[in-house]
Image 1 (cartoon, rainbow, N blue to C red):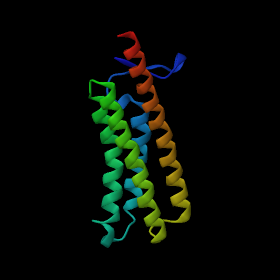
Image 2: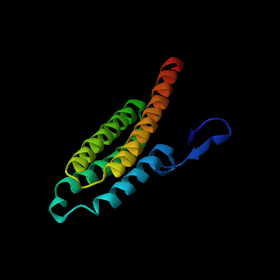
Image 3: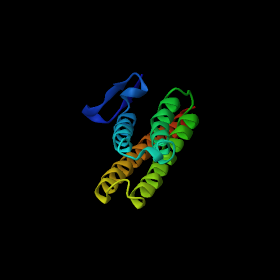
Length: 138
């Protein structure tokens, strides 16, 4: 079992669904799923699909990385998740430019994406420290 957090905030991690990073990204995925429902029908298999796939790939990569046995593998999946977050920003930029979402929605969702990037970066940093600690103690 792994621990997440520091001090009194520590909680036991039994599954990837217990990870704060996964929860933050799941909330973002849900928000994006709601927004794309407003897109016109002709965007169903274009921008709408791309946003849904990218947002699902973030949480899927975090889950897949959690299931790996080695820190380096987990780090690689965290990097993939971070890449998909930046892909989401690009797709949101297209949606804003094509007037599919308002400037306010764009700003709000991009802030959420950047918040998720920070959380993924923190998650990545934790695993890098654990990997270094493990290498020193072996």
